[in-house]
Length: 374
Image (cartoon, rainbow, N blue to C red; front, side, top):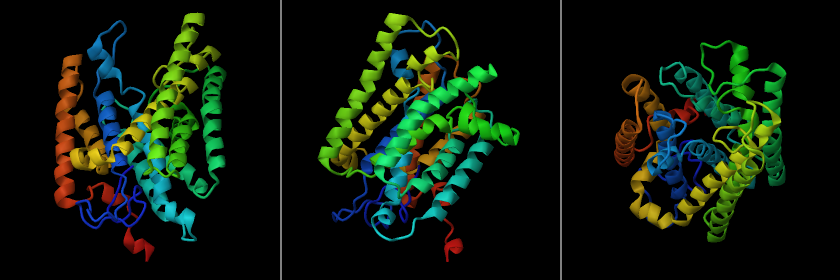
């Protein structure tokens, strides 16, 4: 999720040695990925602040407000997979050992943090626990052939929703959109993480593995960037058009967990059409930021800084929601104002922090403690 100056998942050559970017042309950091991660964080912040759209509400303001719902988290997850591939690129291309201890350390910290942060009264589902588990799932695939990683992503995309629906039919239970916490029994933590929670690993393995595949591409090449933009646009629109045609022909699904739900493209429905469209929009955003690398470097450095402190911002926004915002906001205007204030505050703070202090306070914790690697 996050980057460091000494061990950065988004570096393809030598890491930078100062908070400021090098200008000698030797740094190969993909700043567009940092900017895309910042956009994902702002989008998740917007979704988490609320309020969610009520039935019957329409208008441009509502449409814009609801746009990140079901897409920001997928962008976040795909970037995680990309970061994992870039972090281990040298190990795949040479005989260098995999940094498995760093990955396990990060996964453990994220799982622990996610379970602990879910106990706050912020009224959202913390994604960090799932994030950490997916790190562990990706670990044995770091040197796997790309075709195998792609095939497993497709299996998750197709089989995950089927298993998700089947288990609900067998148990006659509609799975809750909630993440586990330390207050839950161990079995609840396990099944909420793997299948029944907010971001079930059985389904969300697909975007994470897609990110790992994308991270193996030559992302700095324009041909690759153009393909990301083109295929991302296709993947974003075709599933939505398909969904609309299916609704016109068959109507909306009539049961909460019937097989007709497989045609749904509703945000966080866990169904394939939504997953493909959401991943497509994420790939489109990533491709556009990478294609506009020069603009990102010279005009959007503040967004890059926020992307580099993504974990710190994410955790901080949970505390602010729990301590200052909840139970609000109560309407769309309050939501817009709250999001604007929090976004400006976090981006400005991250930019100042990166320029003067470098790596973020929580990002430092993701590095394997040096004393344990000696």
